[in-house]
Length: 271
Image (cartoon, rainbow, N blue to C red):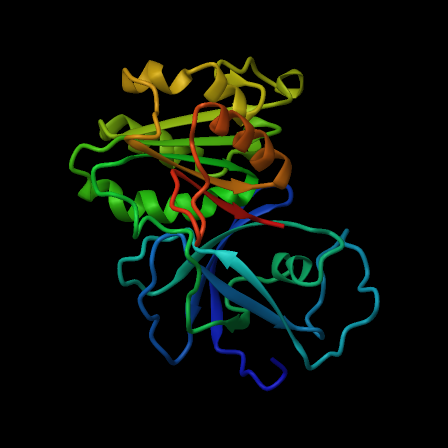
């Protein structure tokens, strides 16, 4: 990576909440290639790039000329565009995110020219309903899927279940609420776990994303419950959530999709 040239520029940066940003990265001097919604790209900055205030120091100290690469799911639509969008949480002890958080619009960074990953809808039956379950920035690949496929929907239901500690940590909430209002095929269910911290009364679901499933809240919107014969479920986020969701899905006879065995739920672990 040390020989890679810095080839992209930060074209937009939005602070969603403390420790959460949405950034747009545009290639400089080259064109973005095609990718599939749900795939990821690699961002990078050299060790000489400064860290944001309040982050931990590098341990050990990193070579100043070596680019630090990390993979991030793409949140933007896969339709040809001039930038890629990413939804990123600050890891104060991390090597790259404190440097990304320190960037300003116009600053330069490295962006991979090839997008990778199999966490996509490519092999899902076209008549299957989709449930997308995320915690935190695990929402990013679903934003790409919704932004790409919702306008092409021919009747299949799509549900996005997003869990966070607080309402202000629900990135893309306004966009998803608006899309839900105009599309009969999208259901958005935000759920928070720390209701007592809310400055105003929270009227939505409370608890954890698996509670949305066990309490059959999707049926309230769809008029029917997700079943293995007509629904695929995607899981993206922290391992504890994935383990909890796998338990309730398996109780409902959903099977994990793997290279060796086709199934109805698909897993992307963020760490």
